[in-house]
Length: 324
Ligand code: BDR
Ligand code: CA
Image (cartoon, rainbow, N blue to C red):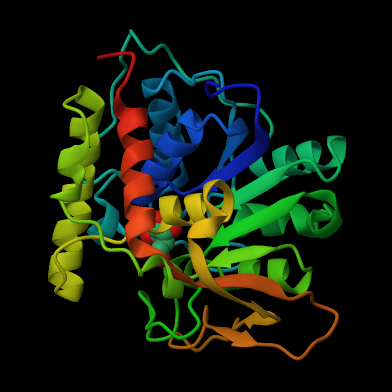
């Protein structure tokens, strides 16, 4: 089976982003998935960088056929903050995916904005679409606010975001995707739009080192991935004094969709997101006793060795590019 039209229909929502890039490479080449579209949201970098990175990465693995939809350029209510220290000035670390490569052609972006792209697919294919959100939830929330019933209309919605017990990576108790757009996270949680979550408690179970990436084949695309991840590792060394990087987004994709057996612990929680003006609290998750919101299945632990092997194997296949 090759990646393409067979397999489980999925839309990825990304703020590409070094780890989003790896998730995209894996999703675009996974034989089990039918990637029906990628929606872009501002987060790690501004929306034009997200859209350009996403289009180029898809084309690098021969998936220029996947529609890319441009979404929210800023959070629902707050000013956008980006993460150039973590992801580099354009979102791909030491690599800049600028310029045109004639061999790859040009991306055709859909004219439909992301929130409507999500609505159209969910409404047209009730209970069929899986949505994997790997950035701030602005696009999903905008769709919900416009009347899209993700709770009943989607087959499953999976989000990499938040933290329960693990120390936050943006504030003491807040994770980046939740902190960038807390109102969007709360909108999705209060409408029971999320089925599964991969917070830092799970994604930080696996530390990837530059040594791990030596297993990738010697291709041009593997070089791009290594140069991007090298930046991520340098950031983690400086910020967290660890020799490696957490690849949150592909870990969530694999644990949520491709290898759920690698999730070794999970809890069902009714959650809410702090939307106060307190900069230390906004974006933090807390347990809610509102029984009109459905519990979310929250992964809290992973088989770290199994996850690392699975991710490296899938990434190796993805970067063995037909364009080398
Ligand atoms: C999340 O924030 C972003 O920096 C990453 O791409 C990931 O989605 C981790 O907190
Ligand atoms: Ca991301």
